[in-house]
Image 1 (tube, rainbow, N blue to C red):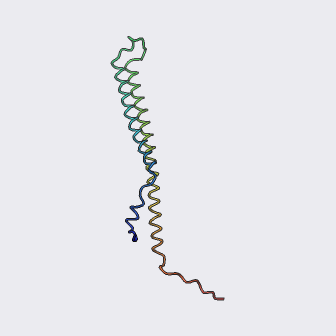
Image 2: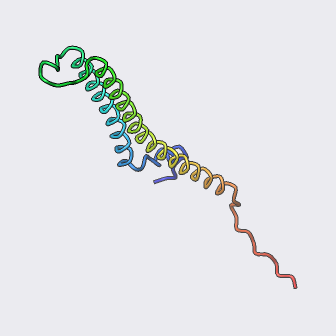
Image 3: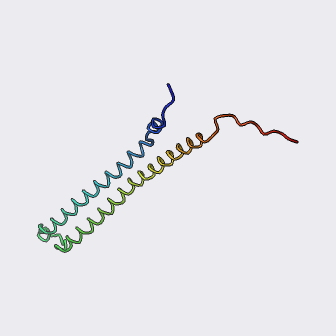
Length: 129
């Protein structure tokens, strides 16, 4: 094999930490699932409070106002849960990006240092006493 070009070396660095990338993606997907599930539950609570007659079943639910308040609270918690899960996934990606940038920077710094070095052996200093 002959010497590789700088472009080939950069491409061959590849992506590392595949498991962390998967975990970050899982957290982001879980965030979306939590948001959709929370939205579904909130809408169902709102519909149930507006349409069902809980007093006929002997349940003192509190009426439509309680249903609207429950809708808002459930929706708020779903949005907060989404933001937390999605932020965890994104923070994993941020750390991976920082690592990749640091690795690439070290690579270029090493090549710059090697290029600036002399191609010949530096003679030892003369001992003049």
